[in-house]
Image (cartoon, rainbow, N blue to C red; front, side):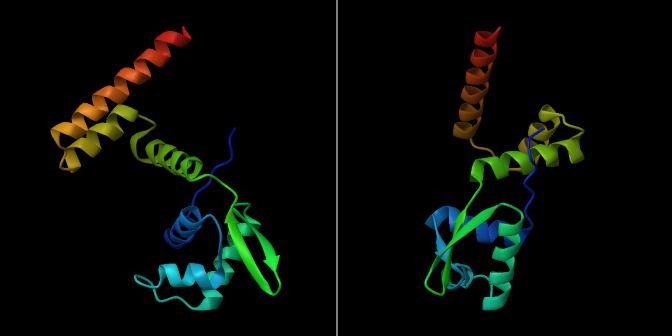
Length: 130
């Protein structure tokens, strides 16, 4: 079974900074989050330490400064969290999830066309695997 990567809101925001920048110091992460969040330097440092203990980030030292990098891919986290959400809220039913999304959002014709194309590609992959 693959390892689950569930991130809380602040953890996800920190990881997003690291995914966007490839690597960053505590100060750089704090600065990137500053427009929407006023966080203490120690709060960001503690969160990065916890993310590292969970295997979600790594760091290297440059003198007295730690530089953090994501250790897991953004897509892997999205997939894990969405799979868990689908399981918990929709008993694993992808059609129920999609139906709920379509009913709850404004969807353009272009987006529907894109969804049809994605479904067609998935069908071709499944047909080719047979």
